[in-house]
Image 1 (cartoon, rainbow, N blue to C red):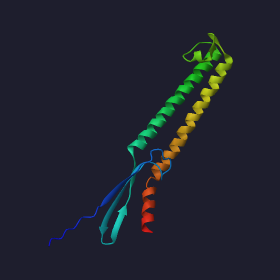
Image 2 (tube, helix red, strand yellow; image 1 turned 90 degrees about the horizontal axis):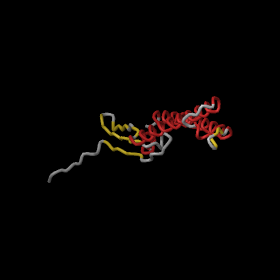
Image 3 (cartoon, rainbow, N blue to C red; image 1 turned 30 degrees about the vertical axis):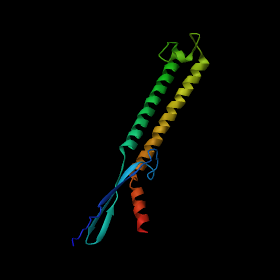
Image 4 (cartoon, rainbow, N blue to C red; image 1 turned 180 degrees about the horizontal axis):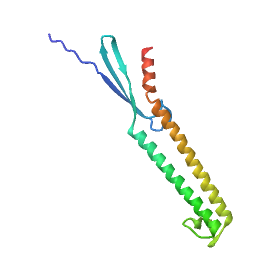
Length: 151
C-alpha cells in the first residue's frame, strides 16, 4: 500500500472586493495569509496591499477634482477681470445678457465658482486624510481575522 500525503497550502490570498471603501477595514485590498512552521510552532503573517483598482480610482478622482477646481478658479478670475476692467475674456459670455455685462449674473457665477473651488479643495483634503489612514492601517483587516480565528 502506498502512502499518499497532500502538502498543505502554505499561503492563501483574499481580495476584499469593495471598491468604494473609505476606511482601513473596508478599502479594497488583497491580503495574503502565509503559514510556516518552525521549532516553536506554526506562524501566520498577513500583509495587505491596496488593489490597483482602488489606487486608480483614488488617483483619477483626485486628478478630476484638481482639474475642476482649476477650471472653476479660471472662470472666477476671468469673470472678475471682466467685471473690473470690462475686457471680455473666455468666460465672459456667462455674465452677459444681450451682449452686455449683467453684473448680477457675473456676481452669481463668481461666487458659485469660488464655492466650487473651496468644495474641491476640501474634497482633496478629505481624500488625502482617508488615503493616509487606509495606507497606514491596511493590515488591520487581516490582523482582526487572525484574532477571530484564534478565539
